[in-house]
Amino acid sequence: MSAPVGIAEIEAARGRIASLVRRTDMVVSDSLTERIGLPVHLKLEHQQITGSFKLRGASNAVAVLSGEERAAGVVAVSTGNHGRALAHAAKVAGSRAVICMSSLVPQVKIDAIEALGAEARIGGASQDEAQREVDRLVRDEGMTLVPPFDDPRVVAGQGTLGLEVVEDLPEVATVLVQLSGGGLLAGVAAAVKARRPEAKVIGVSMRRGAAMHASLEAGKPVEVEELPTLADSLGGGIGLDNRVTFGMVRDLVDGVVLLSEAEIAEGMRHCYWRERQIVEGAGAVGVAALLAGKVQSDGPVVAILSGCNIDMAQHFDVLSGRLPEEPGGADG
Ligand SMILES: *Cc1c(COP(=O)(O)O)cnc(C)c1O
Image 1 (tube, rainbow, N blue to C red):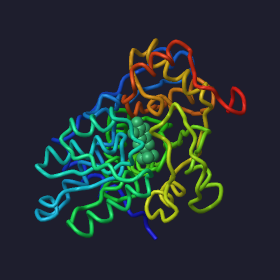
Image 2: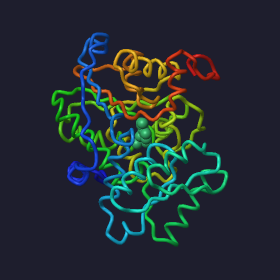
Image 3: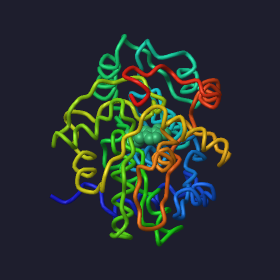
């Protein structure tokens, strides 16, 4: 079976979202270049509108809706970057967005979603109950579910980032891509490998609760225990009924690097002090993998800074060297 998303879908997505998302800059990191001994480029995607690449996939998903679907609106379960992105994309399209969340979600996150013009629907004490409300809105109100990663429209949108990387650095040898549900990696790998087949695409996850890595090892989607991590945007499972991203990641990825919390913190500190960039934990993992000496490449490397949505008090704590406790020792 051929991949559900290929270069044609990614090119089509790019045409649809060109006026809706930023074409973010890519810059040379002098300090990482010196440290690694290879040219290192940073794709500044944390400067994307809404603070993460998730706007690419969400914008593409909204752009392909029929007039009738757009009038009924879109719905998702996400308090994080996908929820923000979908709220923004729907508002720009003049569509309604409902973001369902559990009652455990802190008020600041609810406020952020509402500030972007979406309705926050608080239901139940768990993610599962929030999901049931989504199912009801789809069934009874004809709303369209936009999943955070396991969806061809979303993967194609994320893939537009990969096109920009190869255009800006045609000689790229290795691309380091954040890996959680795999929407970003599947899309970027499909684009990069279509344009430059010899380039390697490496996934980077936190060691704590790396669901895609565990699934690749098991040969099928599996669940892992979800643990608190600095890279909170990389948390969560890939779905036991995963349809799109598991197979694409399995077929396209050249390797996966796992990082400790201390290594992720080091990446965030480097981004701030040396690159002058404020990134969230997930956004820093590519840089962290380079700093930890966990990446081999035979040519220029690209690390994506994928997002900037972090509580600034927490960011300050990380800069100051204050880390949450790690059960199981410093390398946990
Ligand atoms: C969602 C997200 C990721 C992971 O993307 P997947 O498509 O789920 O693998 C990485 N970084 C940030 C900032 C994110 O919001």
